[in-house]
Amino acid sequence: MSRRKLHRFQHNQEAVNVIEGGKPLYTTIKGKWNELHFEKAQPLVLELACGKGEYTVGLAENIPDKNFIGIDIKGDRIARGSKRALDKGLTNASFLRTGIQYLDEFFEDKEVDEIWLIHPDPQPSEKQEKKRLTNQHFLNLYKKYLRKDGLFRLKTDSPFLYEYSLEMLKNDPDFEVLTYTNDLYNSPLLEEHYGIQTHYEQLWVEKGYTINYITARLKV
Image (cartoon, rainbow, N blue to C red; front, side, top):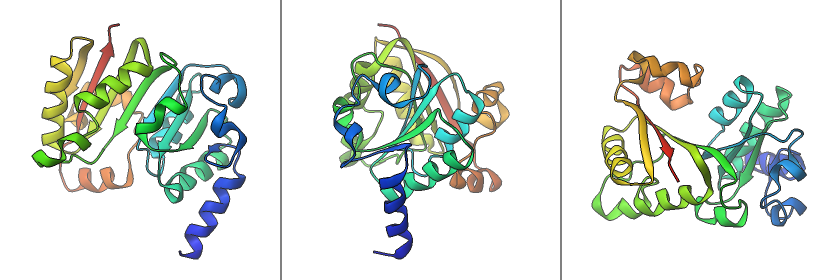
């Protein structure tokens, strides 16, 4: 393991805005994020598979009246987001190191107001459908934690995942698709993103590729 990764893992162990195995809150935080962790009791927003946490930090900076949690299994990635949030003095941005399949260990039913999914792996082959984060299994998982009228947002550079996800959401009777576009940067919906870009998104946009976006509301 490189020194850089070791340094990031050490950062996570010491950072107040990272919850991971071995820390007391890791096993007691479920249903108590606002009570035990965040400075203010505010609506909870999740960024799933957050990577380096560009969106978790960017949204927290732009929307101070909500609490944001970036979730990823890769500790070296979330360490970068954690450090960025701490450097900016953000008390409404935190990170949870776990896999998406284990959300039940950390969130009560209907505890979450919004879920963001930013550029997930499209998993395009038929064999990979069970890994797509917008298949029916995962949509059912999100419905479990979203409150009534809670929002699910997807941003992807994959036309395939965009079309697949749009169809899945439209066919799910519990979701209402509110807005969608296959060209976010030439759409009025761009304002919802506060100019936040991941590193790779910036590279894609500079090369002229379009970005796709969907917002859906949970009706139940």
